[in-house]
Image (cartoon, rainbow, N blue to C red; front, side, top):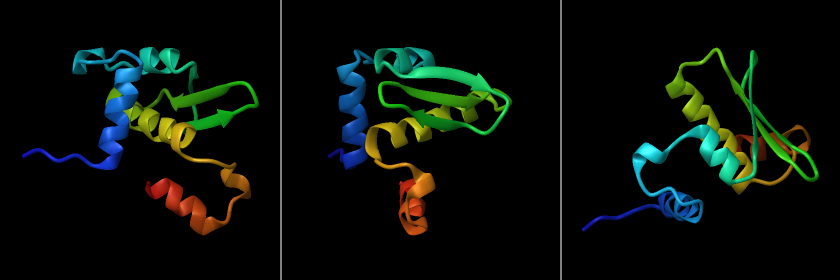
Length: 100
C-alpha cells in the first residue's frame, strides 16, 4: 500500500493543474510560466520578490542545475504556501517557514 504526505499530495495536484504529468516535463521555466511567476537568474543568493501584482523568483545562476532546482522549489514554496514578508516576521516564524 502506497502512502503520501500532505505536501506530496499538494505538489501532485499542483503539477496536474498545470498539465505536468511526467518527470521529463519538469522544467523550472515551464513551471514558472504556467504559474505566471517571473523568473530571473542572478549572481546572488536565490530569493523571491512578491509585488502587489507580480511574483518573481530569482535563482542564483552560479549554482549547479540540481541546486538551482532545489532553490526554485524552496522559493516556489514560499510563494505558494507562506504569507508575510520575512523581514517583518518574528524570527521563530521565519525559522518555521524555512524549515517547511
